[in-house]
Structure formats: structure tokens, C-alpha cells
Image 1 (tube, helix red, strand yellow):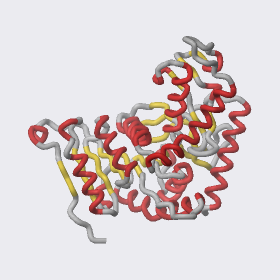
Image 2: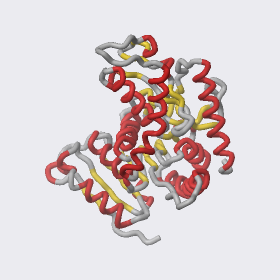
Image 3: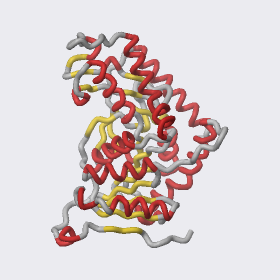
Length: 335
């Protein structure tokens, strides 16, 4: 493949004369709506000193990089590169994969997943060759199966390959709970576990608000009780929210961009932050050989220990069903 010159823009002005500081290089694979928005969020949060956008569409990736670079004055100092050459990702601390196969008219979800996994079989080894020490964050859907595929074809340790999983789902979950109860979303601690998809599991048993178990919280300030009907409606909205957004504007990009950038930040800053990322479970409440989301420590090493979140018997059964569904999907794709 012939490569055009990369689009590269540095700090500019006095930034080039300042003493260097510890740097982080983040490569975002895929310059579409999700990839570009995620790169934008990484820049806004100051999570990286160098951001690389990599895409085979030369004109698009160069244009996205230039558009981002023109606003560098207004964010923490950074350097932006747009390239159609995988070598631009060399030495990255974090590689975020947002690229995937495009759905064709009449194509089933499993067919689309098969083509996306096929893409990963080609793409991931190329990335690992130039960035073998990076933590890989898979965002491409179906993210749990894609994460499992990336782990298989990369040959990397479990910790180095994780998926965005239900980080976005959990953010939706917390927002909907906050709206219903009448508190700031930052005071809600609750997780969606399992698949990023139809078999996602809301962990009501471990949800808290200000340290108070959510299921024990009495309604206040005229808000409706969080009864079973309300909980079912919230769980349904978490799973189906993306469909209404896609129907209205064609894609989801802002929330997943922010969620992805927050995972990047946890890795780059070695935060040991608990996040519901998708990673390989080896013996989690009897679940193994599948990538799905449970509360997991995220640090510079990637996906660490999976925490044993409190679950009811029904929630655990639902999580095991989610694992079986994902494992079956992976087997259908030859993984």
C-alpha cells in the first residue's frame, strides 16, 4: 500500500521550547465518528501528549487530524498525527480500536460480527508488531466477541487486551437512576455487567447512592419509588438507548467517546480505577473462557483483578446466561 505523508502538527509556539514532561502516546484506529470523537475527548481531558489517528482512508484520517490539531491551542499541550500507515502507531502506550466492518443491507448481526472478526485477524497482529507493549482497548462492536478475538490473535497476556464493555452502559444506568431518584449522577454507584448488548445484566443488588443501598432507599422530594416496574423500565432503556440514538442521528459517538477516553486515562495514569471493562474471565463465579464485563481494576498494566460484586441469585444466573450467549457467538465465529 502506498502511503501519503502523515499529517503532523506539534504544540507550536512556545510549547516547543518548554521542558519535556512524561508523555503518553495513544493511537486510535479508525477515523470515523467514534474514533475521531474519542481522540477529541482524549485531547480535551489531557490524557495523552501524542494522539495518532490511523485509518486506511488517507484523505479522511488527514482531515480529522488537521481538524483536531487546529484546536490544540485550547486544550492541554499535545501533538496530533493522522496516518494511513500502521507504523505511526509504533510505541503507543494505549491502542484504541474503533474500526470495524460496515453492515451491508440484509446482513445478519452474526454475519457482520464474522466480517469484523476477520478484520481483527488481519489488523491486530499488524498493530502488535509495532506496539507490542501497548494496552489494547477494543471499542468495535460486538465488543465482547471482538475483545476475545483480539486476545486470541494477538498472543498478548489477558491484562493487555480489554474492551470498553459496559462502561457506557453503566454510565447510562447511573444517569437514568439519578434522574429517577433525584440525585447527582456522581453520587450513584451502580454497574451493568455481562454483554454490551441484549443480555446485559443490571446489578441492582450492589447499587448504592451516597453509600446507601439503592434498594433500601426511600423516595424523597416527591420522586416516585424505584419499584420493580421502574427498575425494569430503566434496564430496558439501558439496553435499547443506542437504537433510538442511531435512528435519530445515524450513530452513537459522544458518550462512547467519553467512556473510551476515561478508560485510556485510567490506563495512562495508572489509576487502579474500578471500571466494568470487558476482559477474559478465567474463573469468576464459575464463569471462564469468555470476555464480558464485571467491575475490574484498570491500571497501567491494563485489566487487573475482577472484583466479586454482590449479586442476587437471579443476577448471577443472568450473568451466566450472558456468558453462555457470548461463548456460543464466539464458537460460531470459529474462536
